Length: 85
Image 1 (tube, rainbow, N blue to C red):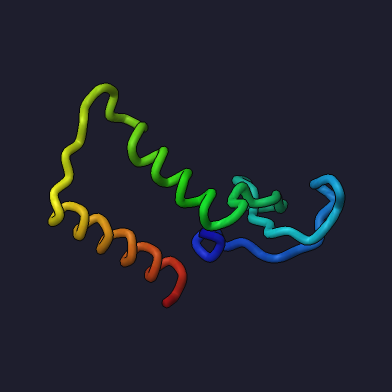
Image 2 (cartoon, one colour; image 1 turned 120 degrees about the horizontal axis):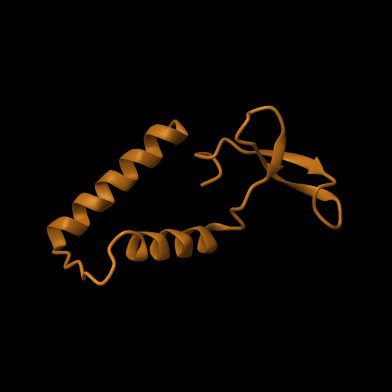
């Protein structure tokens, strides 16, 4: 997630205690803020919760194996395009 967020490893005093952390540009593009991505498991948990709860209400999505392969392909393609692999 960090390479897709274009983060950099920097020293900051914005967190307590001040230390090195991954930083990303703010919305205005002028300053830096600590990235919300803590680690890979937290990022995966965020993805699962967001993908399964936002915008569907009470509907249940039934995914076949073909759907899952297609979604995996889209995810890998997106990550590889945005991370320069």
